[in-house]
Length: 195
Ligand code: MN
Image 1: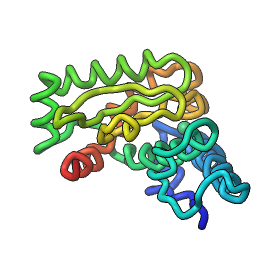
Image 2: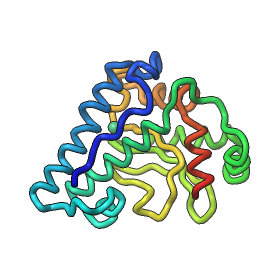
Image 3: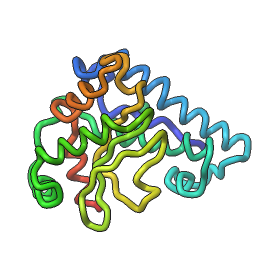
Image 4: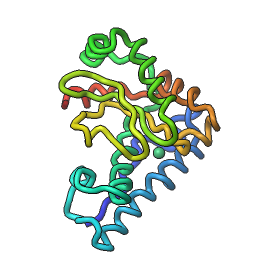
């Protein structure tokens, strides 16, 4: 068995002008795909049990196997964390949980922005649920909430490859755009409902 690159949930042009087609093509067809190719190579070399699920591989590995497996998971989750016509504010149970645990949506945005902008080097900003409470976290490189028994609701990739083609060095502008125009609150709400 081998792992496959999941289809993008929208066209590569669908997030323009916030993320350009060139940006999405590079990120999905080159970076995300490379993690899949690498992990399958590890299966061929006998370094990974190909009968395991991606989550099982992530939780039972370290080093290059963990990095590639976790990056497959993170990127698949990231594509769903974005949507054309996204952004704005969440509604319903998710909005209530954000108000309960952050005080307000504005406070959540401030915390999420700080996490995304302050992650030094490559990594991810997350909205997660931990012990029934919503929380903002950041992880370095391929690290992810699954390792800490947290349920991910939404993520923003802050590796330079995620935004450089569109925003160059302006990570804060990318994070602001992510929250205002791209964040998929329907996806986050569905993840909360399952948590
Ligand atoms: Mn990435």
